[in-house]
Image (cartoon, rainbow, N blue to C red; front, side, top):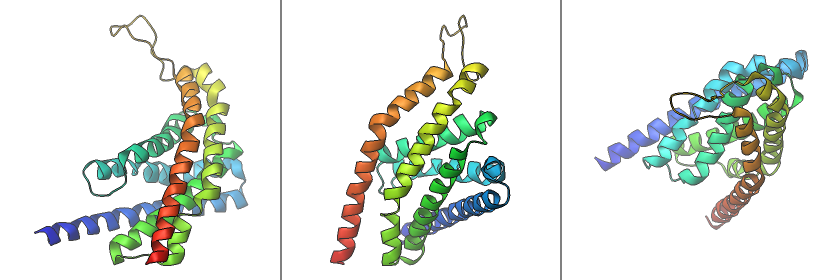
Length: 221
């Protein structure tokens, strides 16, 4: 029974990882193709559908951690996925005015390369029980460059979206109302920017520690 459950778990995670890998591969291909042919102003429109699907699929990773399908701690998975979803839906999808900014291109390419490597790495491990040493190195080394470029793009896009957020008053709740509650999306975005200040270095240090453990373990094996 236990072996059957293990097999089902590996089968599900393998399928999940390879499907999302295909989504991110499509995002990268369309981004680079559009950047070359039409310029950065058109990148978002080209990648929107696969980007929304691939990034939204990451919600399942929180569930995977909660029910014990994977060993990744929810405490580290949640903020990473939460910030990605916020950028994807709360900024890019919600405020079309920001979609032509050059930082959208650097964001999409940074995310896509990172996720192509990550999902194919875990897809290999679940499907075949191992991943090549070069794949392991890429999985735990490319973030050294791609995390700073991705985070910088995220922060920049939130900042440049602030005037549009303030002018539109989208997602704001004004008093009076039956809940006796108010919410201003503009100030929420400012708070989100503030969270990036301590949050980004913390996650970067966490990934450096992960890298050290993973590469040290591979050398011993």
